[in-house]
Image 1: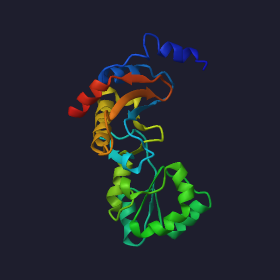
Image 2: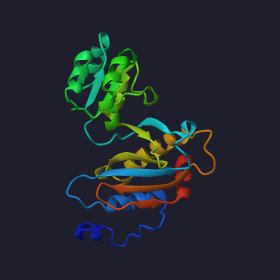
Image 3: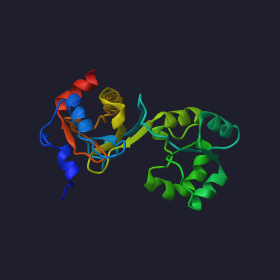
Length: 234
């Protein structure tokens, strides 16, 4: 793949084949950002699981201590007094059957969705629309709950949902380059701790095998697995 001059300049002096201590890896990832916008910082973790088996699926959510640095538009599918609760918590779009009909008509101007359990039978009607976009509420990630206000607040505060893919790799955002190394490390520690606590009992051998950090436009910086364990242990 051909690389531009800015990319080549950004990676000067960085050996992308070397595994770095996690703090050094984050420093290099942030330093390699070169775009004229505030790039996001993402992490990819290769887990020692086989997702084709249901007892080895890793899926969850975590509220990052410093958020994601962007406004999150939240849609709440609920009815009755729960609508007022969702609005008070900061939900951008609130509705029941009327909102479902809007989505059926093509309305998707939101980034996250939450729902109360009594709405899920009807929300299921738009599962084919929400599912592929990662917007379908799910009890396993805490987005199907009667505590709709708390769920909305967590979403607005920077709650990140994650799920291992077919190749056993988990991808998640950590924030913006402008956060600085310390806040990004705090967010990474919260994510890694959450993923570690969700280790399936059926998973054998090394759980967190490899990790890489990268900004939106920058190169992938590999992390030494030993430093990942140290991060978990604090």
